[in-house]
Length: 341
Ligand SMILES: NC(=O)C1=CN([C@@H]2O[C@H](COP(=O)(O)OP(=O)(O)OC[C@H]3O[C@@H](n4cnc5c(N)ncnc54)[C@H](O)[C@@H]3O)[C@@H](O)[C@H]2O)C=CC1
Ligand SMILES: O=C(O)C1=NCCCC1
Image 1 (cartoon, rainbow, N blue to C red):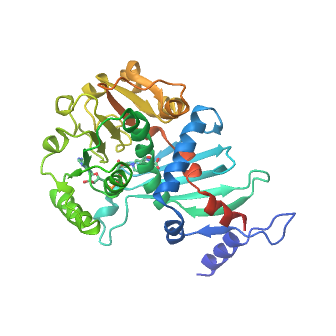
Image 2: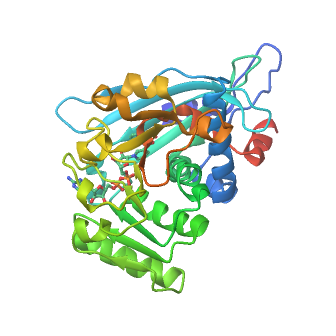
Image 3: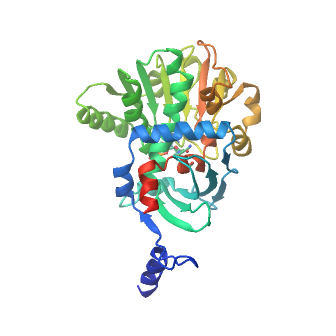
């Protein structure tokens, strides 16, 4: 207890030679939830993607520490983003412990904290709880990619299919309906009951019947305009023959098995976009096998330096190459104002 109090005191009162009263701020999850909106998260991620592609970001591939004999992993993601509104120097630590959901008192499987440092002195200014930021930022990255690779091409936004209804599945279903007004949002999950109860919860929340629960992944995907995969599946859950020409996919899930949610044939017959070619090449195992289909960065499409795919091509956004830039990029203006206090 004594140690805990001491640690707490040290954490909250960081002394510097210039300013003996410099205080470090801790922004907890409930404060983050009050500050973040889907709109400002979207804008921050959009800006971050652009900065990646115009070179105003310093960021090396994340370091993943795998815990032996488990599927648990800790990711360390340092970086610097130069941007008047969203910029910062910092590091996110995120863990993915898939069995947290099975605990007697279940916890989210993905948990994160973000350290923000002063860019002129290098002194730590704040620790921001990063779980909600990670949740929203990941879905916003898929939404930005979908906007620029699909929606802006005047393609239909009638049916959305979401495979996997955990934390990411839920936020993708809600955020995509919010931004793109899908008439039908199909939900599939390995444990059927989870998808059924999420459909029920969201229909109630939005007073609608647009959220539909599907018993099998094939019927969920067939006929969908946009597909999102948010699972830990080590085997393909989407096949090429189920897809409409010109459909768009966001592959969010899987860490060590990056390409496994989508069948290889999907990659071979689609155009693949990432958030950062450099970090994706370093991180995505097997990227070489589909290198011919890697078109480039979403940020380059936004910046107008990369052409979009023809309308009948399948497009894929592989969300695994994005690291700290979004964690930093997603710290919105209001939060930075708090940090400056
Ligand atoms: N690219 C990124 O920046 C991020 C990626 N992720 C990844 O997205 C995925 C989902 O994350 P969360 O929703 O936070 O996790 P979660 O634990 O809330 O949900 C996991 C989902 O995967 C499903 N699932 C697990 N094993 C499966 C299998 N063998 N086959 C089919 N479905 C299976 C579960 O039923 C559940 O729907 C994870 O792979 C996670 O690592 C999550 C956050 C950020
Ligand atoms: O980038 C992230 O954030 C995550 N990536 C994979 C594991 C969960 C969080």
